[in-house]
Image (cartoon, rainbow, N blue to C red):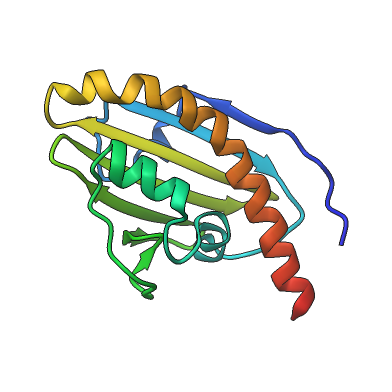
Length: 161
């Protein structure tokens, strides 16, 4: 199956109605990446296609190593890539975790021919203001690949039936 190579659009200006899907109304950092797609899937299917059931080695390095995020081990219907599923609606799913110095949400929204990945972070200790800004540049470079990779994996799953 050949997929159109749509551009991923990213912004730090997150609409309030999307930010409200998170559990961190006082987030210090927010960004949103959106991909137009013909692939139809539930938000949970998109999240699993993008992130997997367990974190990859690279995700483990960044999430556990640099950010100290507490992730669940092993695959579970209650987690995606080690992040707890803490909320969901018809077109969205919220994943949550935290470390000793920050709290994090990932929200995946899938509707209207688009899939979006929203990241929200709250610095619970002052070190968060030092650690996240340089890592956010890496995050913003990697996020489009998560969406494109998720689209490829999800399209392949649909094609296999």
